[in-house]
Image (cartoon, rainbow, N blue to C red; front, side, top):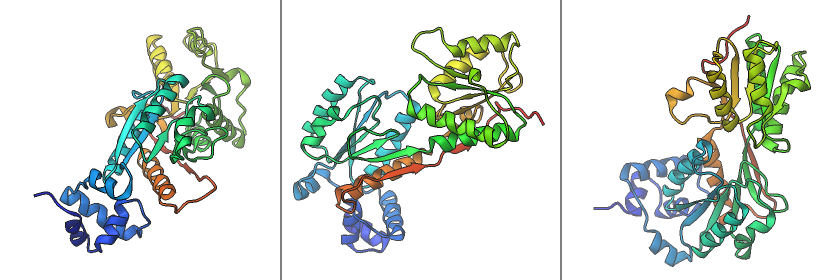
Length: 335
């Protein structure tokens, strides 16, 4: 026999009204929230969203729009967020817009037609006009990892500057005084923040990374990064370490280093920002600053529920979450 809200209230030792408030995203004391969450998991309780929706004129469905569903960070956060929302009786409808503004608009119209209660967005290259479908009905928006220019919305980001600084400090601690910085195309904010943090860590320790060692990716294959790898192979550089600003550049660089017979972790040290691998054993290989997906997902849900229930009114909220240093085997000690 399926468990009921009454069973959850009894198991957690709180009033039925408190469980109901928790399920609808209301403010409940952390201690009580923890007990309710545990009871829900133990009883495998799942509320009836149709019945709830009829009572409250809600669908109990959120949308999430991602630029690339295969991206480890986007996919991992969406998966974790889905679990958190399910515990509160909400479903999550995911759409991939393939970094295409026209496709984003069509997906936004689709989600709006489903009368979603709110939407989470990874806004890659999007503009305020792309959100017309959600603005028509004042659908709450939580932006993830980037700002939507001109639009008032709650937002969560990882501390990109802090991640770059942390990576710089780590290399310096292991005796590295000269490094190459592999960036995205110029103008990408997250890349710039991570690069600036890394450079500042070196400056603080009295080391200067020259502009020739700050390399940029581009859409065609003839990139500064590939040229740098050729220099490494021919031993025409004094660089002892490489800092990569994101997943895509890291994968490209690692494969090219290996292809050219350069041993990562002995010939050259390598450190990166981003969730490069989803498998724990793979994560243990590369030293990197990783997004704290659990905290990001929990914070995104918290902001959404606060906005929906009226606990947050007016000014948009921004939460900046520290990244986690994953110590792998790709940085060697020069001391």
